[in-house]
Image 1 (tube, helix red, strand yellow):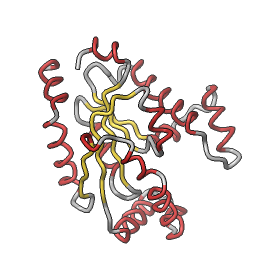
Image 2: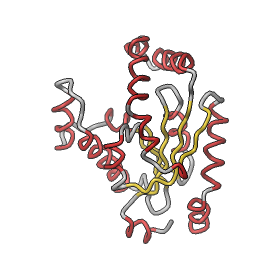
Image 3: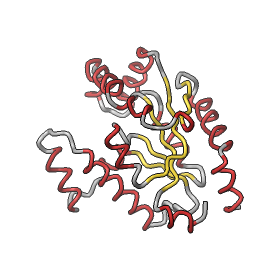
Image 4: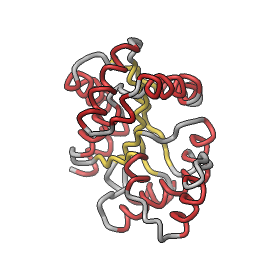
Length: 213
């Protein structure tokens, strides 16, 4: 993966992590982000660190302050602005780093917009069919992070249902050749092991490793 290739394609080499709430996608993304050659971007963190003084920040506030869903194009604009800021500050180096996304895209329309900026190398689907286990994890996380409003069973069930109805359709958007299903009911270290094994077996990773080292 050379800088020349990056400039020509205009796209970031990207790994996507999908999974229902509580599947551990944020945990895995954060761990990968601490490993050299990976840059992790979580959409939730982008929103939480938003500068509302900017034009795009004002656009976000216009919808969120009225309790309306933020349109897909605005969401992707926010994400893109956050990533470009990290490129400018050299925190993310697209010529040698792979971008790791979780929390975006959330639906097929967002995926089409993200595809304009990302070359999706691999999609990791953290699968956890045991919904009781997902609810247990979310309750535990909500208490740990002092987000007690998220600990309600109704709220949790609604988030899982939303994932099933919308986000899971994303799996059909991407080619089966780049989709890896991983058992999210394993321990976090075993999930990470499965992800790393898949990444290091990819030709694009092996080729880029030769160029970097």
